[in-house]
Each structure stands twice: as C-alpha cells, then as structure tokens.
Image (cartoon, rainbow, N blue to C red; front, side):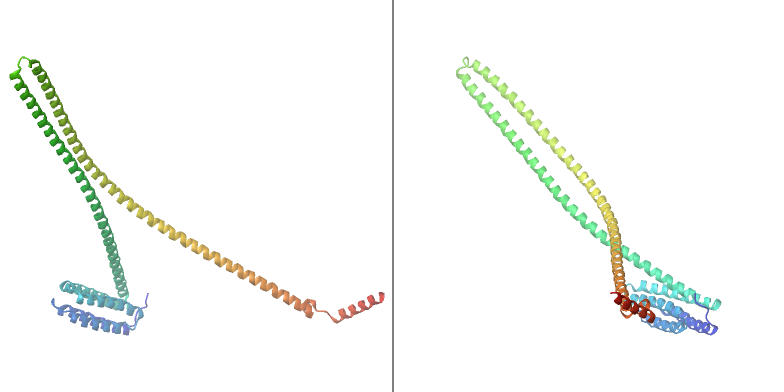
Length: 361
C-alpha cells in the first residue's frame, strides 16, 4: 500500500490526468470512420508522454501507467496493420473509453484519498485479461491439432473400408458369373435332351411304317424310355431350380453378412477409439509418475552424494586433526613444553639418582 501523496503532487498529477482525459475526449470526437490510424498514433504518443511526466513522482504509479500505455500502443499498432479497419476503429473507441474511465477513477481517488490504487487495480485486471486470452488461444491451437490428427485417422479408415468393399463386390460379381454359367449349362442340357427325344421319335415313326407289328414292343420300350427321360428331365430341372434357390439364399446370406460385418467393424472402430483415449490418459499418468519417481531418485542420489562428500570431508578433518595433535604432542615432548616441562629440582634429583645407581653398579 502506497502512502498518500502531498497536496502539491496531487495537484500536479490531477492536472496532467485531467489534460489526458481532455485529450481522450477530443480524440474520441475527431477519429473518423475512414481514418488511416495516423491521428490515433500521434495522440497516443502525446498521452504517453504526459502520463510519464505525471507518474515520475511515484514508482508504482509509473509502472502501472507504463503497463496501460504499452497495452494501448500494441493495440493501436495491430489496428493500423489489420484489414478489418472499421472493427478496429470500434475497438479503439472502446479502449479509449476504458482509459478515460480509468483516468476518471484515478482523479476521483486522488481528490478523495490522495492515492492511486484504482490505477494499480486496472493494470492488474488488464494483465489478467491478457493472460486469459493467451490461455484461450493455446487451447484453441491444441484442439485444432487434435482435430487434424483425427481427420487423418478417419481418412485412413475410409480407405481401408473402401478396399474391403471392393473385394466384397468382386466376390459378388464372381458368384453372379457362376450362376449365369449354370443357367447356360442347364439350357444346353434341355436342348440336348429335346433333340435326342425328337430323334428317337423320328426313328420310331420311320421304323413303325415298315415294321409296325414287329416294333410295337419296341415302341412301348421307347415310350418307357421317353417317360424315363422326361422324369430325369423333371428331376434335373427341379435340381437346377433347387440349386438356383440355394445360390440365391447364399447371395442373401453374404449380403446380410456383409452388412453385419460392416456394423461389427464400426463397433470395433468405436471401441478402438475409446481404448486409444484410455491408453493416452494412462500413458500421461505413467509419464507423470515416472517424472515424479525420477525427481525423487535424482534428489536421493544428490543427497547421498552430498552425504558421502560430507563424511569424506569429516574423515579428512579428523585425520588432519589427529595428525596435528600427534605432531603437537611430539613437539611438546621433544621440546619439553607444557605438561612435559621439567623443573630444575627435578633435574637435580634425577642426576643424583643417576649417580647413586652408578655407584651401586
């Protein structure tokens, strides 16, 4: 929280802000619908210079005014370069009204409280709005990329189903050709049987003119043979009709199976899409867990390395301290310093004892 400004600074800042508000009002009246944007840029530069001079007396106010002017300047540059000029000019008017309202609030706050919190609040709201717009743009880009991937996958599936449909159509055409061949064969057999029967009848009639009595028995036999041929013909005809019916049933069966296979493949495709989405989610969760475990392992490894270094350092320090203490004790012993220092009396007693021992020997 900033402290209130002095009366002199309040008057100065209020005068500058009032001048800015007047310039914005004039700017709103002079901007035409067919303007090229030059007047907007010039007035914007004048507004920025006046606001900077007014905000020099306080650092936070200066920073907030800079944020507002940078945003306003970027917006004007975008409007000048955009082909949608009329929409841009309408947006300029809205931004001008926003800045005018902000200045109005600042003037009211300066006159009542001597502070400029409304300016900082407006700058913070503008930052949040720009961050929200950037987040929306990022989400739209991600959705666009995912849509492209799904479209590509759909094209591949359509190609695969087209190839399968062509193979089914070729099989149907082959079955139709077989049916046509069977029909032709049946027709030829009928013609053959008929021609054979006519020939036999003709021979019988010719023989009957010569040997009517002798060939009555033969005629009867021939009639029996004719009846047998007719029966065979009837059976063959019924067999061919039955075979044709079976082929028709097979054709209907294959058509139903084709439709059923298409439905099953569509269900499999839907299941695969669902499984793919679940696998993507599972992979993302595993990736997050892996990153967390990897971070824990790295931290544990660093902690162990630091502990080993610390232990090695402490061991070296203990070894160095032991060596120093040994050297110092040796120095004290050799030079008879500290607790190892010998007095004069002690030396004399020692010498007498030494002499006494020598005499005893």
